[in-house]
Length: 398
Image (cartoon, rainbow, N blue to C red; front, side, top):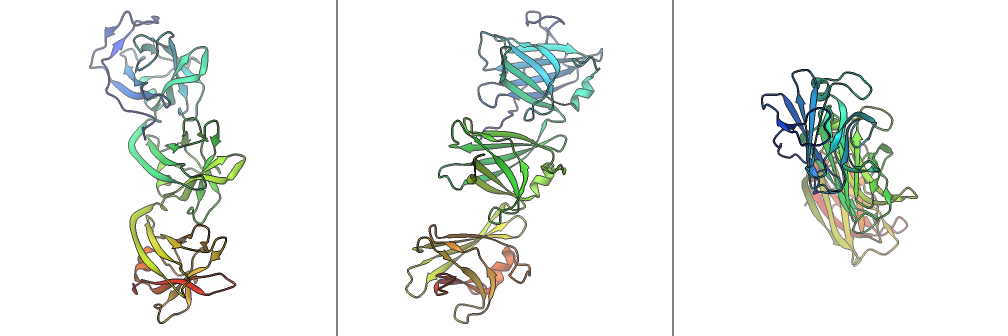
């Protein structure tokens, strides 16, 4: 996935005399001057990108030089520094000179906000804002390029989670969280095969995806035309602080829904934070019993928090049925009592998914405990007909 904000090489600095709207009178700025460069790019057009360079002048004013490549000619492009992050949007704080459509260059020197409030170079380094470049004055909603600045600048730290297809085949994607200098985060959801003309609501929910849970955080919806959602993250929906470091450790998952009218249809889903799968897994064979013709596997996937995702996958299960599944103590030959209950196997798919963190008696039972358990799995035909149709030893009995 291409990042929303792309770091680029800084071009040679230039400066236009105050009051000039074109770059006909550019003179070099001494390289000894203090400066800070931010990336500026388009979320919709990968060809449009560039930089916004902030230069500290000796008279305590600041010069901002914008350089863009890949822009169209025929009209100048209004530019400004706005309040808030680009994902949030905000009012204009400082009006900059237009970006020239031929050169892709704009330069502005200032020492106050548009309101008249003084602002220094050092203030701008911690400013809650972003650079905004529009396609034209007559199209204020058509954003050509943007870039977060000051405290909203992105660090080099990020985390990406997979969003797998769920109820609609072919729709999947990624959710990437980028850390900001102020500790907040920029969340970019990118979905492949999103539906044109639709807006797909997206949320972080509590717990794992297989457990389900209430909405904890609401993203900006995924635009079906682009497959992209960009959201600033600073607090949960209940206003409790929720920063980048909190996301990495959160007990939650992401749901992307088909539409506001079809929230029950989940088009993509993925565990995040402590629930992310660690990459380790162990699979056990479940053999046919009583000539049922039903067999398969039980795979346990380790999570970052030490728990496990259990996936039972069976072949030839009767349609429209639910098949209870349990871990019993001892091996298949010895039999024993039920110690753990899985979510039932869906006969239409042959699949059961269950989070594993504790036995039925609430004793801790995590991934490493599964590997050493003295137990076996039985899958039954139904609650009304508890005939064993598939079984297999697990843990110490494998």
